[in-house]
Amino acid sequence: MRTSEIREAAAALLDAHRSGTPIPPLSMTYPSATIADAYRIQQEQVRFWTEAGDRVRGHKIGLVSAVIQRQMGVHEPDYGHLTASMFHPEHRPIPAGAFLQPRIEPEIAFVLGAPLRGPGVTVDDAGRAVRYLLPALEIVDSRIRDWKITIVDTIADNASSGAAILGSTPIDPAEVDLPSVSCALLRNGTVIETGTGAAVLGTPFNALAWLANAIGALGVSLEPGQVVLSGSITRAIAIAPGDSIMAEFPGIGRVTAMLAEDDPS
Image (cartoon, rainbow, N blue to C red; front, side, top):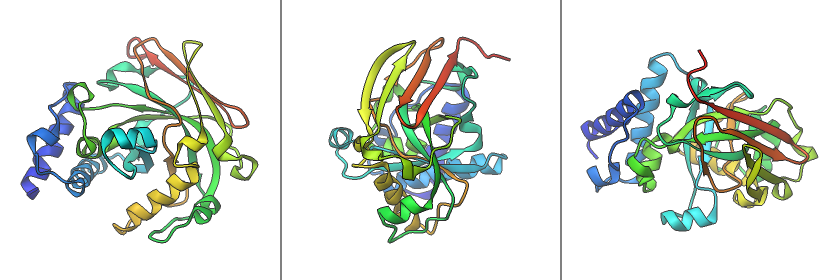
């Protein structure tokens, strides 16, 4: 894609954020767009947000499930940026108007205590760099109409990022066998989905190593204090105003998010 088209596509997504009106798939508007083009569109939006005063606080990893990869016709995950404005406190209502087509996923969040600079980062390197982990919920959202997305669409749309909600009790990763960690996702008190950490590329540490190497190829590193959402343990579920969502991780803890009927202010 030409630079002018990259900026045009980023502007369309930014306008969807502002207006609350989804746009047609970029993969249809720009049929020759590649994955590399999609990351350029993503970066253009991140540049806009940071120049407006937001800051990058970490990253999210998507497309970690083998089932989803087959569905999307891809063979590796993708990533997006988490800015400070995307984080919401646990137990406080989140305005539904911030989202267009929200879904929610349970994840294990890593908070880094040491830098990770790829390429060449191993799973052991990734584990040593984690200061602590937290239970997390990610609200994923799409600025693409009806979630009619290809890999190009979701990457361009910042990996369909929406919001992150972190639990409050840090856990030493050495105390947890991440592949066997179980998770129950509850909506309004009813279990909707279950899964284990092995759904995330065998272990969430694999996802973290993949991310460090993927962004390392671009000259970017993961830094101490940054948060990484390692990918969904279950299928994403749709949520609506008034819903209360809880993710329970035995041995790690639980985290709750509430989607407000109206703006709590």
